Image 1: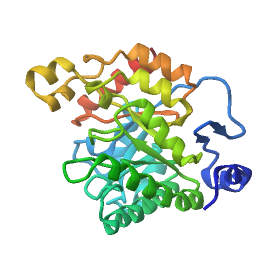
Image 2 (image 1 turned 120 degrees about the vertical axis):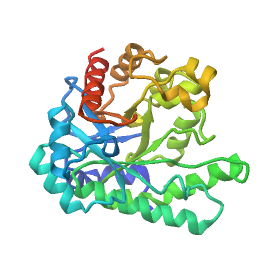
Image 3 (image 1 turned 180 degrees about the vertical axis):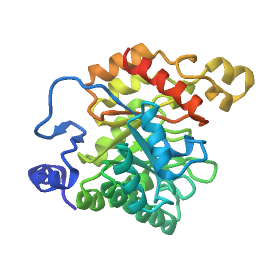
Length: 305
């Protein structure tokens, strides 16, 4: 396995495979040709949010017309890569990232080595797919803790599984963004930083979900600590009052900018850490074109803060 120093020395070889995407590591960025001027964050949404009965190409064109720049897919994809590329070219929509679809049902932290290997293979396929689609990041949940899997076991197995993915990220030049979800695992920004730093590879970092943190913290605190380790950002809203009054998951039933996230603080911190991921991808309940247009407008407000 190539260690971090050797990898950086040979970064020029991988740079060609990354289509000039920045390679961000635990201690900084390995890249050239990076503009120092701040750029507008591009807006993305999940494909399953599009609830219009349209062809694939027309869905892509609709999203473009509504002001989005990209679509995120679950992977391995149910639609062929060739079809997605045709729709991408026809619409001008990008596919910057994919979400591995097996990491939750078959966690990388599972005590069963065969289950872990299944998802390692699945993530490897996702890395290849996102490369073919012109993106650069695969979202992966690193592990799950429950009454049958202890925290210690989950941590050890998750670290081992992610390390086994290093040859695949090096082969493709694509990045793995580990995401914070309600998995009873990695519950503080300090631990999230330590986890990535233990792996210590410039193509393995964090896919930070802003809304998931409100249950037990503040997203701006996590962004400050994770800093350059953040490869991509997911946007969703959360209301602590709804959580307390109506039930835990009801906290998500609130429009962007109408919950408890201090978006001005979040975006200020995003700029302060010099976030290079380029994207803010929304992950909320979908709907028709009017609903998606409203979300696009809300994202415009957020990125302008």
